[in-house]
Length: 527
Image 1 (cartoon, rainbow, N blue to C red):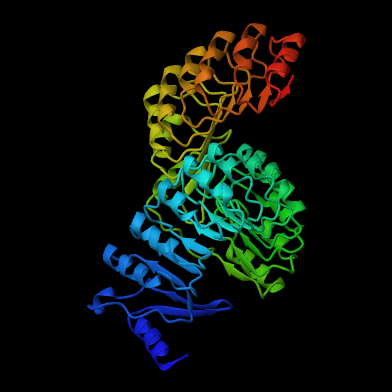
Image 2 (cartoon, helix red, strand yellow):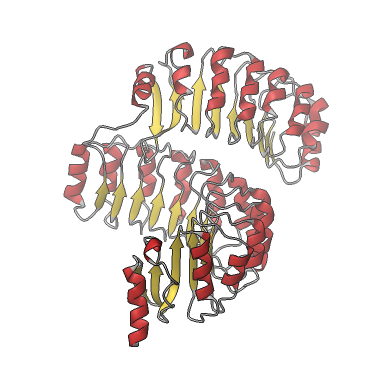
């Protein structure tokens, strides 16, 4: 390095930049730069710097930096996080000749910007987390055949956009966390057999949808936290013999799931914060000699359990709060719910995300209002309760609700209109409840409804007509609905988006079943 080049690097470091060496060169991170200290122009670009990361900063500084980067052949990676981007700034980045990695996370990056940046079809890594990308924008990615890493976390991506990714067969690392995807949507990814890292945290995927992951036999790192994944769904993970890191934080798994996890031969890191595991499950993990890191915060694991575990595996780094009292603004509400014999599960941050009543649960009048104050809830299971209209209407406050089960319950059907405001509600189970065509009229208007169980309810052929409004409905169960007959075949046959249909023990005849099979060739029908 020449004296002048070393001087340039030192000038950046003096402003607060941090440097890090890698195999490809030097990375310069500008996140902590004090821009006010540089009243004149920015220092020149050190030639050994191949990666630039900028977080925050005025539009003027962004323009100035990008002007410096234009034409710099040694630059391989550019990250602009938390800034405003526009056509001009994207244009500057596009003129960096050897660029293969871009990061626009937490910016106003849009579909139009994506079309512009994808003119460089040599890009190997694109990070668009928390931007304004939608399904329509993803069509630009179809030609990015060299892409190995793609981050779409926390974007409004649905199955309609996911099919544009099916040709990206070079992908090794894909992040779709925080998107409203279901397990059925993953069918568009089955050609991505080289995937080694997959992030599906906080999506609409349930344990039933995990079967769609069977194509990804090379997976080494899998994130499934914040989803409705139960013990039975964990069984299919045994096939991932290369899996080294697994994140299940905030899922409702119990000690039973540990019996499966201990069979992963290469597992090194397990993140189980906010699950229902206890010392029983922890004792089983003590036999996993490959384990290096374990997170069991906000679980039922005790300090004694941790001590016993560390006697067997002292090398494992453990994150635990077993000796601490939880600090939360909703602790009093949680205490009230538990006093009424209601089961709660929390995420890694101690926020309640799942609620389930039991046989001993008090009448809803004692606790329903308190429940609706837990705004972080994603999964709610209520059984054998009488719900009055005024209380139930408050369920509209649970904006993050993804799955709702109301089994064997009595409630005024007109109050189901409250569910229509829940934008994230995709899974609804009303089996054995007092639901008729009146309620189905409101249910069909739930925006994201994809799974609906109406077993042993009073719905009829006439009521099924309302389901034409449920455009995202993929899974429908009308098992043992006596008033569903061959007269409803035309309505059911028009639901072309269905993937699963259960009509067992209804009034539909054998010939009616055959008719449905012909009308819905892509649907698995149980008769």
